[in-house]
Length: 271
Image (cartoon, rainbow, N blue to C red; front, side, top):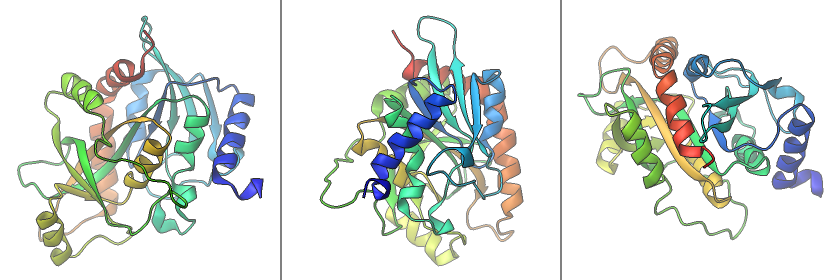
């Protein structure tokens, strides 16, 4: 029974990471499509291990996702923080179930993280948001018909995306946009009619990740920030090229590496 308990599996994964040189951490960082390029600004990791060597993890399969779990020391002042970085994620569309999608979040909580920063790539419904624009997520639409919470676990999502962390992100990224992120299960992109529906629902951008992870994080008491990179403007006749999405996200995230580092240090640094 213990092996089938996803929270117990996460504790086992955290113990395995401790044995590989990962001590207690402050901030969970999940890197979406192309976002691994941002970690170049953090310097060399303190420790790293392939996903497949830690219980419960699967190798990320989406284009633009890395294959390692890394530990970084970000900042060198009194507010330096220990960042547990996952260079890729498991998506719902891969068919492994919701527990696999949120396993990194639960493992990070078991390793001491109290703050979670999620990143992803999106398609934007705002024509004034050019590709390369970073959006601070203010709220979400969960359109997957799934929840990571088993049974009668009632979690308040009124302020799922921390106002404190959003203010920190605006301080360090004054050019960042803000908006509502809608999650569809994928892996196909939405039709024009579905895009029109999402706009009517209040979505500013759409993607295939993050929302279920945020719900799992809030259940465990983690304070959450989500940053979403615009890679395409929805509704154009040119359509969507998955490889171009990753290329734009990687180029834009690399330019934001130092900004992301400052956000992490301010968000999760020790006083």
